[in-house]
Image 1 (cartoon, rainbow, N blue to C red):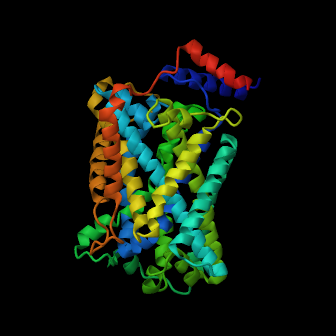
Image 2: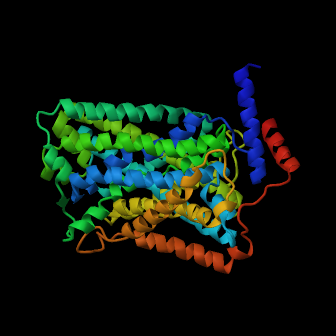
Image 3: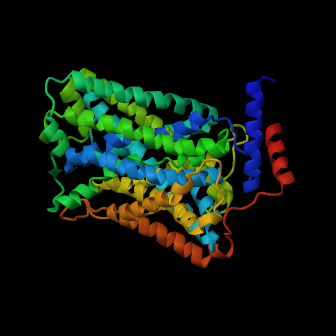
Length: 509
């Protein structure tokens, strides 16, 4: 055995021992490298998905100045949230992620903290999957409209949305090796895609917006009269894009050197997205040719590409963005299914026995994959009658995920010196970074439940608050009448000998 193979085997042993201490057997295949772990989160953040699918929203809600300056502000605040999460991830590298952390960090009532954290994480994961694949459906529909004249009716977009979700469900059934490979490819697709799009938009158009327009112009097409309010709700474009990086935590049971690779995946996915996304947004905004025409287009970036670079080149740029969005949606289904698998493994979801079943051939949680797909489809269906449904889905993703992100950080701050740090930690900066993260999440949780358009009508209503209240109500009632009697938080699967027996049985299959 080579030195490299010995080191790999030792790392795998250490990972399994750590997982055993957390109470779980190594049921999933541990085949992902640190780079692949980072790639999952970077792919789900997907600047070519979030930045572009909500670009129309940004053009109407704040305009160029908010699009360009909102990104670094939100990105830096997100980095504080990610750093605080990464420190906890290093201590508890398990697929359960956030809800597991909450149980272990709570001084008392750990099961209740775990329960509500898990349900918010479940809501956010399903919503972010819906948002990503819904955005991809918008772009695919726009491409088919330009190329073949396909209509842009809501039912046509929903049909494409369902097909995209189906493809991503099928891809995830083939196993972690294929997903890991596609995620590795996705990183380079995103980076090269940004360079290609920005390069074309920088050199091909005969006309560019002035720097004064790009960096200072505010546009308000919301119906609200307060510029400050519009600027603040315009931050949704950036904050929605910076979601999904908890995927690195959910994939730790399939990653080598998980206690270090998981935290690094979280932090580096945010940092690289921060810089690359800013370049992309500035490049697209400078390339706007006719603001009034493009802001009213069904998919504004598609119209910007065509107007700035010509019909053929514009379509090719659109295909680059679509490819990135499809990679992103595939990874989101992966992360979502792992969270569902882990939450069900501990009995928290109705029908848990079904959802935490692992396919013995591929060693993937197949049923959880399809629950993620169907849940995302249901969340996107209101678009059939609500024009602002996509913005609402993105708000639900932000609020659901960020509440789940910050609850373990809040509990870790309350725990103080009793917190047992992992090999990756923040040292003396833990408390400052943690409290900044908590404050920021409290602010955006309120902000993104506020109405985005005036006057408020059935077609323009931001149903985010309804979705959040439904989850709180369902989880709260379920807890009060039933779950508090049997849900004790993360379960221990057995003694070390029993965990080893589970693993031996899986290896023999």
